[in-house]
Image (cartoon, rainbow, N blue to C red):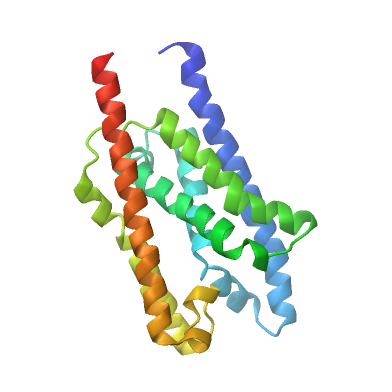
Length: 218
């Protein structure tokens, strides 16, 4: 590997880390005071923020990028460098980007710093991390059965969101709002989203197999 090719993934990781951390800090700095103005304590406001898949997934991406950039040889760095882990993270952030831009963009007419944070979390980071996965992540060993394992994260998120919503009345996304839609509609929405997760996961495994075949030919 030449010097240029070894530097390029590091620069992309640095960009991903910078954008994700900036967007997260900006989002929290805007949302926490806003939630407090609605009567929440600081702790309640932070807890509310952690109810969003966007926030959780971008935190994972930010931590992963930072660890791989600064301490790749650590135990955590070795964990995040696994092809299956990086592919799972790419899958999750792709879903975040697609879900927002297809289903939710018209619900968020933000401006200024809020718009920058919103675009960073839902558009820029998904695009950059997907690019990183396509260009620089080793895809050895990825199999179809891995696609099912990658569904644990969204399934766990859905269960927690339903439990939290039932206890507090807060549902993070309109398509999960049991109060407005009822359980039957929400379960249908969740099933369709899970199918979407699975189809994209299978597509990523197919891409990995194609890349391996391409390398073997070369």
